[in-house]
Each structure stands twice: as C-alpha cells, then as structure tokens.
Length: 234
Image 1: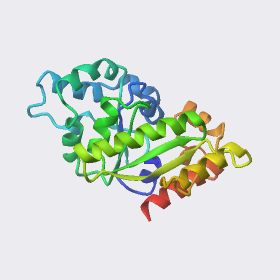
Image 2 (image 1 turned 30 degrees about the vertical axis):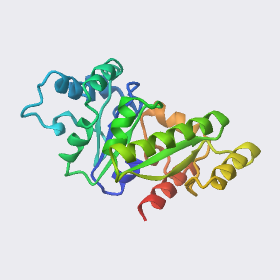
Image 3 (image 1 turned 60 degrees about the vertical axis):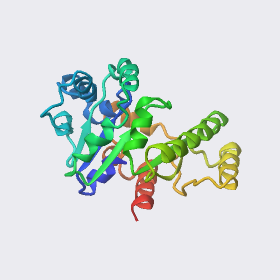
C-alpha cells in the first residue's frame, strides 16, 4: 500500500514497528543491515534522554523506490518494550510523527500482537486497517482487537477511525472464506469490498524485496492492492 502511494507521486513514509523488521527488509533489502539509525535507536535515545535537539527525520531511511521512505525496525525493539511501557512512552511515536509534516502519507506496520507498539500505533494513527485471514482463529483475534481499538478511542485517541477490515488470503472458490465474510458483515463489522487473494507471487515479492506494484503491476494481486488503495483514497 505504501509502495502504491509512492508510485502515484506521494511522499510516503512507512513506519515499521515490528521487531521482525519484515517490512523494513521488504523495502530496503540487504541495505537494512547497513542502517546506522533505526526505530530501535530512536526509542533507545528516548529512554536515555538523548533526544534533546535530535529530530525524528534523522532516523528515516531512503529506499530505492522514488518517494518512498522507511523508519526501519530492528530486533532490539523486542527487548525495549518492557522499559518503554513501564515508563509510559506510548505517546512518543505520535509526537515524532507530528514533526514529520513533509510526508503526504504515513503507513504504520504493527506487530501481530496487542503489545506496546501496536497500541502506540493506534494512538498515533488517524485511521487503521485490520487485516483478516479467512479462518476461525483470525475471527477470534478480530473480536479482541476491535475491543482494544474501542478502548484506545475512549482513553487515548478519540479521532481514531477504523477504515475497515481487509480480507486477506481470500479463496473465492472455497466455502469457508465466503461464510466467514458473510458472518462478519451480518454482525455489522466494516468489511471492505476489495479482497486480497491468496497467491505465491507475494512470497516471490518478499524474496526479491520488490513490492507487487514494481514486481508485476499487471498481476491479479497487484490490481487488488490498487483497488484497495483506490477504495481508501477516493
């Protein structure tokens, strides 16, 4: 989604809050190993009171794609969670993003867990997209996540809006995905009309560190990502 935004001429920043750093690796490839400043350095400087005079833009890295930048993650984020949470630093990400006014769009990639970093992202964001893999485990997790979003809205970020639920790994010929989507809609949940199909091509995209819009713009999945982007920006 960030790659599509950048390809359409918008100055776009991707913030990677996942200690696995998959999104950072996706956009930077091997160059991630050479980064001297990452999001972990940013939080480390906050914890050690070294942010006086420093600017969040100093931690942002360029990618090889025009208009696309990343605030990269690294594995040390995992060990920083407890310290950051105990010292109540959940607003630091929002404060940092408030200074990055030159970007037309900011996307935040969160860990697949309701931890400090996910909550920091929800506090910082204007809107959120919730991915939904079509299985019963994802449905159970979705209920817990919606409750957490409502809690964040009530206590920390009243302007946060759920943009919608993105159906991922969709298989149109299978009965279970169709039934689960119908049940979510029957419950009044905001399931978006643009579905993302299951495809091995996305794994090739990861391996080559080439977002789908650059690897194969005519592929079905690329068109689905573009349809989702159009749905959210129209």
